[in-house]
Length: 262
Image 1 (spheres, rainbow, N blue to C red):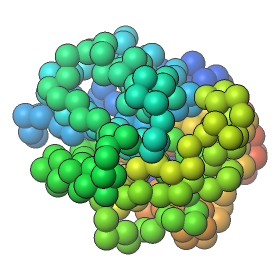
Image 2: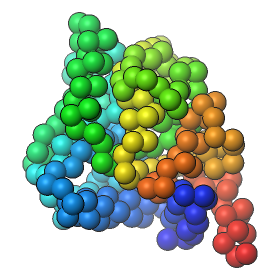
Image 3: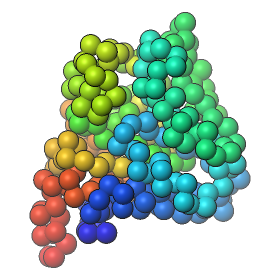
Image 4: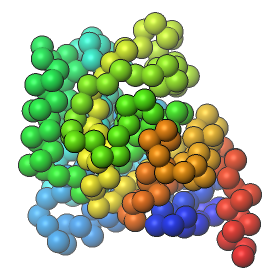
């Protein structure tokens, strides 16, 4: 690890590479699961689906985790994307994680449900029955958490799951990430878990590699806590660790290093 610093209750850890970042985040998740399983028989974990999570998800294969005690959820899903499309987040996580281990249960969001509002209610009921213990997420280029983009983010959202219209920077990120070749291919709407659901978890693993996230990271750590910059709310969560690499930390590394030397 290159640097470690607390900003309020939030802990920031910076690593030299995406690989080392992913390994560290996987180790923290494994240790957290082992610790919480001393208190309860099963855990509920919400996972993000994005290329930014690749190294973290791959590193989980090297950890000794009791997956048979984990109920798994994912935090968002496109509306109206082909059932077999690899860009669907359920398909992404099935390939990268859910099919690799023997989970106690896996619960998928269905963005192709005939009635998406009813699907939101169904998934909300599951989350009420299985409230999150741990959330594994990232930060979008526009500062979103899950698909809570700035225009729709609500720190006091009364809903657990909702239908949202994706803003242009969010949709462009999907092209930047290589998930879609053209903006026109990116769905305009999605289902997302809301910010209160994510913040309710005891522990949050926030994995944010890459230079395209550097500005969002700087905003997360410097901007006032407000829905205009949704990820700033993480600064209010005492169980959050943000894992950065040298690229995503480029705008804040010198400042944090200076603070560490005080």
